[in-house]
Amino acid sequence: MKPSESLGVAIVTGASSGIGEATAARLARRGFRVVAAARRIDRLEKLAKELSGEGAEVMPVSVDLARADETDRLVEETVSAWQRIDVLVNNAGYSPASANEQLERDDVRHIFDVNLFSQLQLAGQVTPIMRQQGGGRIVNVGSMAAGVAAPLAVPYSATKAGIEAASQCLRLELAPWKIDVSLVIPGFVTTEVFDNAREQGQSLREDPANPYRELMFDLDRFADQQLKRALSPDDVAQSIEDAAVSKRPRAIYYAPRAGRFQRGFLGLIPERMRDRLLLRLYTGGRWSHPG
Image 1 (spheres, rainbow, N blue to C red):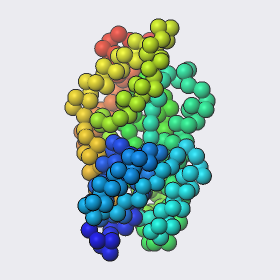
Image 2 (cartoon, rainbow, N blue to C red; image 1 turned 90 degrees about the vertical axis):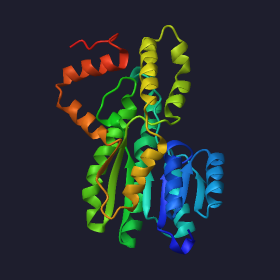
Image 3 (tube, rainbow, N blue to C red; image 1 turned 90 degrees about the horizontal axis):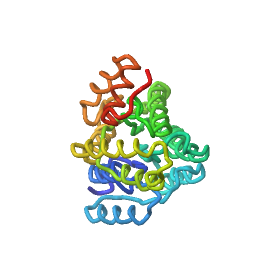
C-alpha cells in the first residue's frame, strides 16, 4: 500500500516477538505506518526489513519501557517521524513466575513499570495528540490472569487487573474526544512468555530448598497441556486489528471468545470453591486450599 493510502500511524509495544510482532505485521499490511517498539532492535529491524519488502512502512524503535524517559522518547520519535498517532497498542509485558516472597520490591516495581505504568504513561501522552486530531484508538492487551487467579503470578495478575480497570475508566474519560479504548483479553497463546519465565526461574527449579519447587513443576505441566491447544499470536493480533479498524470497536475482545464464558462461570462460583477448583486444576489435586 502506498504511503498516501496509509490508514494512519500505529505504535505497537512488545513488537519483537509473539502477539506484538504479529500485530505490527497485521497493521502494517493493512496500511498503517507502524512504529514497532521493543528492546531487541535486531528483531525489530528484521521485521521492518521483511515488511518493507512488501511495501509496508515500519519504523523500529529500541526502547526500555521500564524507564519513563525512554517511554517519552517513543512518542517523541513517532511524532517527529510521522506527525501523528492514530492507534496505540499497549502489548508489552512479562511475568517472572516466582512466588511473592521470592521477589524484592525492585523486582515488583520493574514488573509494574513495564506492564502497567508505561501503558498508562503512553495512553496519557497520546491523548492530547489524538484529541487534536479528532480521535484515535487505544488498544490495551490484558490477560485472563486478571480475573482467573493463579499461584506464582501475583504481580503479573495485579498489573493485568490494573490495566483492565484503567481501560474501563479511560473509555469514559476519553469518550468526549472520540478516542476509543478497547481491551483485548487473550487466553493461552504460543509465545516466548512461558519459555522466558521458565528460564528466569531455572535456579529456583533446581533448588531443593525452594518450598514452591514442586508447584513450579506442576504449573509447567499445566502450561504444557494448555499450550497444546493454544492460540497463535496471529489469532490475538486479529482481534487487535479489529479493535484498531472497526467503525464501532468493542470495549472488550476475548481471544478465544469462549474466554468470556469461562471467566464468567468462574465468577459465579463461591470463592472458596473456586480456589479448590483452580488448585486441583493447576496441581492435579496435589495441593489443596485450607478452606
